[in-house]
Length: 415
Image (cartoon, rainbow, N blue to C red; front, side):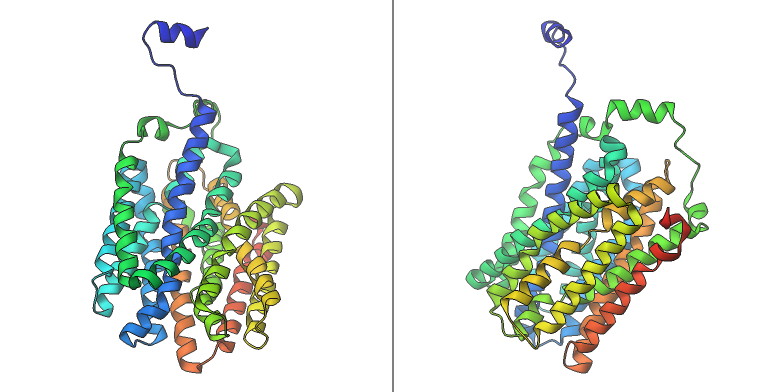
């Protein structure tokens, strides 16, 4: 009756909060698919670019490393910009950076041009449509269900890999790597139009019921960035992000090249690694489900164990290249990529809740950016020095184990 009377009086009825929450989640998922998929597509472009210019593996991977570094360093600024200017400005800047970067890269001739476009600009662009703004926006709509919502968004990494890696290979084979980058750049810039036209006042407002809860409950504990940095949980989460990213990206940046060197056809290597997107969704949601069943610490440790098994399978593939080991690697390693992210995000949001949580969480995420950059660059350098992948795999394995340690010894993360 209230809705009918509102219509009769000419007043537009309020949107259904549940439907709006799903719409926000869908939008965040789509942006993450785009950002992470385009970022990880560089693993397919690595060999064609190397062959075009004759650059060493470490030189080419420096582009990927810069993207990871830029994304991590931008996180605190993005959190602060989100708090001040809102999601429309943040997401629009992200698409502009991504689209422009790919168009510039399609004409690049020198390494520094790739480092500037595909490195710095793509890194910033991914961060502007990535997990920091998404987590803040989704927190306004999902509250205590944020881990589940973030699990869906984190799984976008896998969906992006599944869709855009094989697509990248197809575009490269048909138009060349420059034509592929032109296609990506134009498509991203076109998406700016519908993004800007979305009803951002409604999307950014958050759930009315959560707003009432936030008003009635004292949830702001007065955290500032400096105060958070004096807490052991801040550096525990930072180091977990850093060392885990070192190990995972030392491997993932070269997966397609590794599989090609092991004897698999390029399209099969790209498709197999892209298929990790399917299992990532299952792995992400499974770890989040385990969080409610056996607790956060055990769920996180389980995800690390599965990742390590996948790394061992990948190492064995160089000596025993077969579809069974390849499938096992994709399932184990691929399903756990980023699976810890939603739980770490929810942990940070819980410990450092308050008005400054965006800035604090964004600063913690610097650890992931630094680790991704250092891991991918170090992996390329180790490969160039040794000429094989054995030392690289050992380096990655040790890094992942170190990343797991805070959940074993830090009190705030064991609760």
